Image (cartoon, rainbow, N blue to C red; front, top):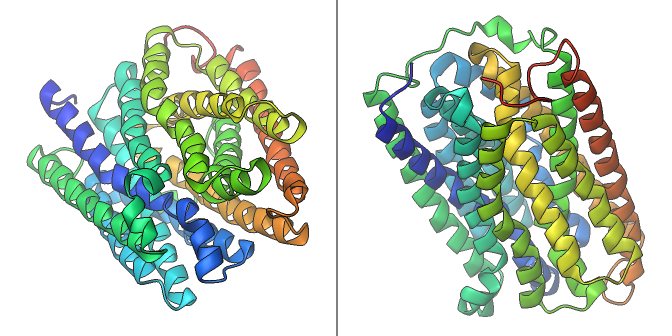
Length: 416
């Protein structure tokens, strides 16, 4: 049942607050990576571990989190996971010894992925199919503000960076506190509406009941997993230090170039969500967005073109894919199983994030990548480029299937 039109937009605003600070915290390691390397002697592998560990707990837990969402309601789970994120960022900001910082990132990771799928599942319950893409796109758009602000924080919070590696991480902790408040407000409003805060009807057996998902869902899952496994390890872990070492940029300039991927997404993601709601052709849009990702790494590794070209391509890709892929998933799965479907995607995403962060760090260390050997980053670029290509192939398979008799409207004009 659809709720009051004004209330659903308030829910969207609160959900955006709940995720934005956590996106900032997720991306808070990249701007301090060089400080961690110079002030604390961290290796590339240690820096990679700080983001790899975000996905580690979600390998076993995301599917269970999705079931909990279906069982107990999205807003209840959002509050609990936002609280875990807040606690994790505090421990990361304390950060010494290294094991405490890793544990803080681990705790943050336990909450962050399930928080996202709880908010997406909640929005799917508040918005009907013809407006879900716009609503979810706006959620991602406002969340990207957090990522953008993290990347340019060496500029607007330069005084904190002058104080070393720790003050910027305390800033991240403060912003997750605000996000926790947004999650609490969302839960209160949702509970008052007697809607999604009420218990679901999914049985515990649904935790293992994933074989019945349609083949189109598995194609989307493949793209979602590989896209995240490429994008976030590069842009949120290694991009800034890569731009410093291989392209000769300062920390501030490297953060600015990286930030424009997220800045572009702030404005472009809702536009593509609106286009998907209005005109359909979702499979074609996903194919376009996925094709730009391997082209980005080819441009970085094989040309001397301006970094703004690769930034524009990745920013466009990062705008199209999230705008379409999450609401498209909701079109393929029954509402009572949506949390489980999102949870399964996040299980495999988390595995991919962990493996790719660790693999990229190991490749960089093995190749002695750094300011004195910028060519050592080539193996990392090859890894990300090849995985992105496989993701694009999955979108082609999705497009072919959705144009056939077993499609769900993702390959054609608007489908309700």
